[in-house]
Amino acid sequence: MRKTRKIICGILALGWLAAVAVAQLNVSSPSPVKDQASSSTGSAAPASAHYIGGNSSGNLGGIVACDNSTQIVMSTATTSQMVALVSGKSIYVCGFVISGGGATTAKLVYGTGSSCATGQVSLTPAFTLASATTVNLGGGLGYVMKAPSGNALCVTNSAAVTANVFIAYTQF
Image (cartoon, rainbow, N blue to C red; front, side):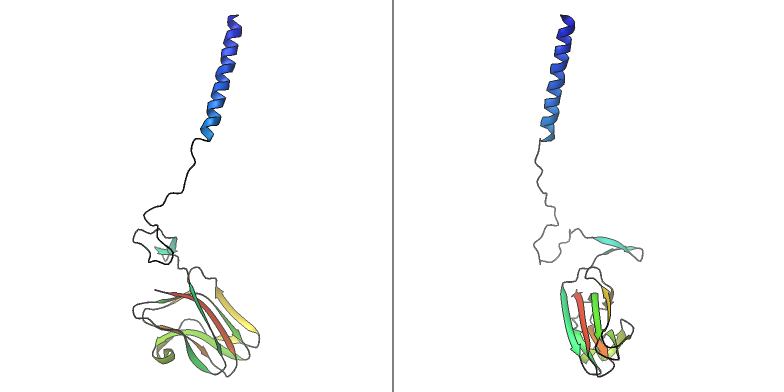
């Protein structure tokens, strides 16, 4: 009788433990936790914001996300402004596409004055284009080039043929 009672008590104890273990699996329903960096979309980044970063020349750098785009169709040999300068702000280009409609060279430059005429500096090499050729770089997250603070972004076309240019950028 004693042996039977011990076995029955042992089985009951195991059953009770199993019931407790199952109940513990569903003890809580976690809900999202907001931290100090919570902010509304479109507002300035708070000082306590958490950023996605990466190693940038040995230093921690934040990932730039481009939220603007512009395009231009050029058909003459000229330099045209794509993004106006804003004093104290840099232009970050996250991606671009340059498509040729004939034999020409095109490049992105920065500078001040009318169509970047003052202090013009190349951001890209002069890409040699032929009819239906395209050059593209970048994807919209993380910048591929930067125009220094207080400069405009422009594009040059070396011949009187069509060059289509699209850029994704942000400015801060």
